[in-house]
Length: 292
Ligand code: ADP
Ligand code: MG
Image (cartoon, rainbow, N blue to C red; front, side, top):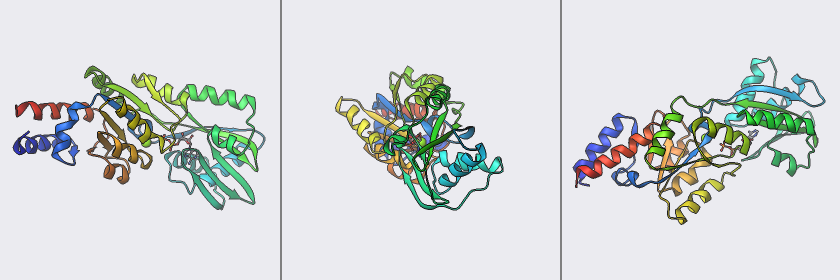
C-alpha cells in the first residue's frame, strides 16, 4: 500500500476507535484466519459480581470475612468482586499478614494466626485440601450456569466457597458471528475452569474453548496455532494476556483494559466493543484493495 492510502486508512480506523500502532499492521490485519479471545474483560464486561456464599462448617459472615480479607490485597477482578460484595453485605475486613498472589490459582494469607487460601480446585489440591462431595456438586452446578466458583480453606481444612458472575458484553455475540462469516476460526482462551468457559462460549456462539490455561500458557497456545500455519490474532485486556498479544501475528488490546496489554499489542480497540475487530479487518481489506 502507498503511504497515502495507509495514512487515510489509519485515519478512518481511528475515527472508529481502532488505533493501529503502525501502518504495517493495517496492511496485515486482513490476513488473519484464527482469532483467540480472552474471556474475562474481553468477551465479558470484566465486572463480576458476588452471587453466592456457601459455608461448609462456619457462619456465612465468618467465611465471607476471611475470604474478602485474603482477597483485599489482590488486584484481580475476581478479588475486587468479592471485596465489594462483602462490603455491600456489611462485612468488615480483617488485617492480614504474608499475603501471596498465586497467578492462575488464587491467593493465600495469614489472618488471626490462621492460614487462609482462596482459589481453584488445583490450588486446593496443591495444599492437600479435601473438598466435600456436596460442595463439589454445588460448584459444578454453578459453573454450568457460567459462574466462577472460588474454594476456600482455613488451616488446610475446606471451609466453603464463594461464586461470582460476570455478564457478556451486549455486542460480543454479533461480533463473533461476523468473524465466523469472514471465515475466521474463533477460539476462547481463559484461565477460568472448563465448565464456566463453555457456558459463556455457548452464550456467544464460540465452538473452540481453551480453558484452565495458566498465564504463561496463552502465548504457547498462539505459537502452537502459528506452527500449524495459522495467521493468529489474540485479543485481550489483562497483564496475563500481554505475552500472547506480543506473540500473535496481530495483538489486539481492549482500550478499557490494562496499560500493559496495550503496550504489548499492535492494535487497540478503544471502546472495548468486539465489533471493532471485523471493522478493523474491513478497513485493512479496503486499504489493500484501494492501492492495487
Ligand atoms: P483469566 O484468564 O480469566 O484472566 P486467571 O488466569 O487470572 O484467569 O485466573 C484463573 C483462575 O484462577 C480464575 O478463574 C480463578 O478461579 C483463579 N484465581 C485467579 N486469581 C484469583 C484470586 N485473586 N482469588 C481467587 N481465585 C483466583
Ligand atoms: Mg481478561
